[in-house]
Length: 237
Image (cartoon, rainbow, N blue to C red; front, side):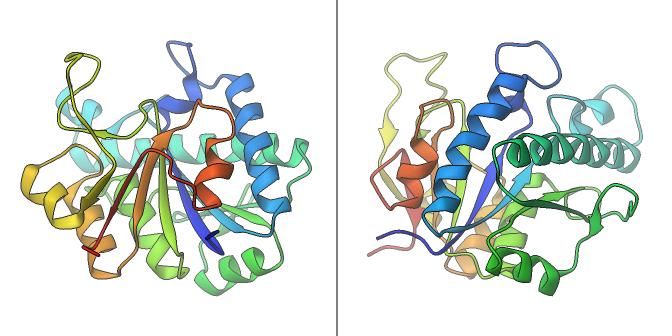
């Protein structure tokens, strides 16, 4: 069954493609194509994007920056990505609005829940930038929070791997991929899907998480249609 309203979490690193830094326009174009197909089928879609391709707060603090300051710099990086995504989406014919948790009215709307939901109802994609506006929280947690706020049916986490594994498949060729997991299994096994705060938020609000490979063409559309793609995390059946 297709989802009526979904939240797509994109990592900043995903936007790099094969580049060592920044944004690969071909990746943005590919994402925009997939999203346009989803919107054309009637699904309402919001996006939360990370900033790790430009600046990662945790790394900044590890290198000696004040943690809160580093996180704020990371939030600004997510806004750069959000605006770039907006440009790519609108070039593909998808009406898009960027809303930021930190007000910067010259380039984006401030995050207002009711306005965001109205945009979605009108068939616009809403890209949430600036994280949740507070340091010490990841964009994964922002994705879970915004999904709960806009009453999303599902959180899609589009990554560089095709699901959730028991260990890093790049380092361990015999790593096992899970098709279905419960929230509690992810938390108790400390699987590196999303941070524990994000998992707990989705668990408490009964919002399933689907983890899949962003770079497989058509995967976003398949996931939205409810097809079996990647790994699904939810409550026990």
